[in-house]
Image (cartoon, rainbow, N blue to C red; front, side, top):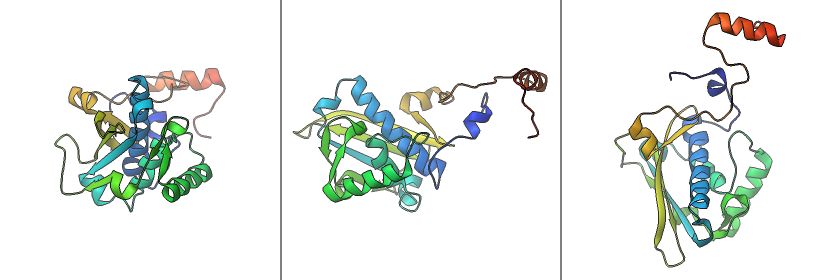
Length: 196
């Protein structure tokens, strides 16, 4: 990817797969943030997730189902506490209830009903597609969005993938550089070595 930095390539996250675990968790968290931005979170009573193509075909083995549930519950790959995420997941599965974003409204969530495995369906933009729908108490769709897990934990929504734009960086670069000379200069000024 053009303009990618070392902190785009090496980052904290969850596994076993950046495309099938980190990306879907990030997409779920982005969808909840979108609902909050649109002031739809208080009206949301149910969320459904459709996993398409590759995400559906290998999703259980790569923990895609767990990742989207945890993402909806407010966990993010870079800051996840694995023990807290596992405890939350077990509670969600036992109670069939989920707190959106970790501190939003509590909704009913039955993964057998609310996660749709559509392995035979593909989206033309990318094989790792997943769609979210937020519904109100009457079953009316409040919002829906499709995301694409494009590798390395990066996620693009429909508009971003159509624009063919690089994913936004999640962390600022502490030592930005554009050449080897600039890299060496940054290291010298910071008192760092490249070999150690």
